[in-house]
Image (tube, rainbow, N blue to C red; front, side):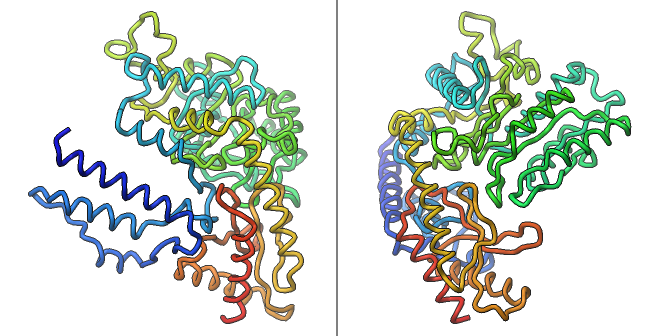
Length: 469
């Protein structure tokens, strides 16, 4: 490394460490918010024919850090990823510098063995005694691979022959993640064969409504093949009844996939793992470590109960130059992946797990659930706030109601105005959502830096802005 390159790396590291330290301070703004048009006026985004100086590159990095959203700030409660962990960040830095691809053991020996260890540990949590799995590019990709394995299990020759008159149908709840829709049109199943089944008052799929939908499709000559359950829905944080869904899957011979991208970590907790009772009977499970576990994006896995089906479904090509038969060929993870180039996501998770221990994740989950209970108590005790849904998990859905006379339209607009003002202030980042025609403020307790004091400050600011608007 030449001197200028070394200096650039050292200066960048110093800037990043300073940035992370600033995120510990709740008084620092989450972002210096500007509209896209205004931000373009502040940045120099040109790409010139000639190179720029070392100092210009440092200035570019400073500008990026100045205007980016601080997702590890304790007031960032907007999405299903947040927070940060030092060991995981260190692992991501090492991964970037070493710059390998996790498709063969030969080029990624340590990463491959780490990934195998992680998949084994996650399968133990789920209850897959001899399961398999692989790290993938996010929960959406994991959902796609999971329901694709179900297709392959039902009709193995589709891999070579394509669809030949089959009309596969997949059943999900009306609160499922939108990645299911993307998966079915990507796989050629078609969105008209994605059945969104009604949910109950707790936003969990209704097993009886599901049974009736399956029977109706069988009468129509279609081919029900998969149930797509959700453990931790995106908005409400609801958990589908997996035991009942597993019973239906057994009865009708269906593949059961569980999207536990968000809710999977309840399995770390003896107190809360009952929310996923029956998951060991599933055929495949999605897990996102970059959500509750606060790892840098992206860090996801698809887990399958039947060993070997991933490779059977996803393998194809590469033998001539990549997947050579040798003493380590069983460790070539690229053979059971839809990708060729695979980013090493194992190191950051492995280091973080080593740093915290399994009990560290347990304690984090239990603490976050206690924070959720505290928040609900605070809202219920305030005359101008109300919970819209009683949470099962860490999704908190509520609203500001100044008085009983306000109509729904003005109430909804007032809550939107509160969120806009906080975003402009850079004080808190939370969001709104709509569940069954009810609009409310939605925050997610995923950030591992949140304390009760942060929640108190949030509610105080919501009430203050609401009363001044």
